[in-house]
Amino acid sequence: MSWSKKSDVVLNFYLEEKISLLANQLSFNIVITDGIRTPRMQVNRMYAKLNKTPPEDLTDVYANDEFANEVMDAYPDINAGIAVVKKYMAFSTPSKHLTGLGFDVRTTGGGQGAPGKLSSSQINLVIAAAEQLGFSPFLESDHLHIGVPAEKKNQLALVFILGVLIWISRKS
Picture 1 (cartoon, one colour):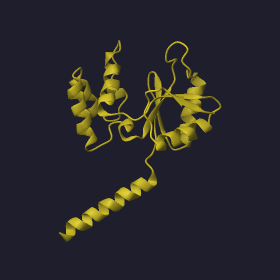
Picture 2: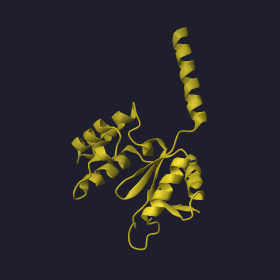
Picture 3: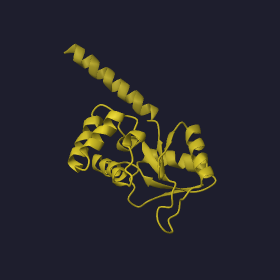
Picture 4: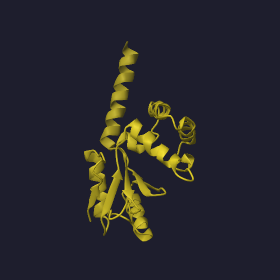
């Protein structure tokens, strides 16, 4: 089928291509509720989970418990949270949203009249289609997060550049 996105969602061509591949595997439309994030946007999303009653435990959502705990410790200071995100971005990928390799699919209503609410069986179909495409789906409380792999040509380019840098450093 097809897909749409909320007006404030930022996507790159690569994500749009992957979302289209996923949507083409489905017999219903999907709504993309989030895409590429800045560190500030990332902290705002994480703090929104902490503002819920009861607050969500970020270690249940993020693979790196140390990262999640540091963000929770920084709460509610936005600038402290941003500093934590930037620190982790320097040596890892705390969220695929920060690298342009993640997007969210609406699973709940999204407000009165909002399209895209998915049934349990539709959520399972999205998860299965995402996995078949080599994506990494993760069901959160109100959406489905989907991570996509980096382009192979980008990985090869990085390996090549790293090799050149090592070669240059050995020559000097």
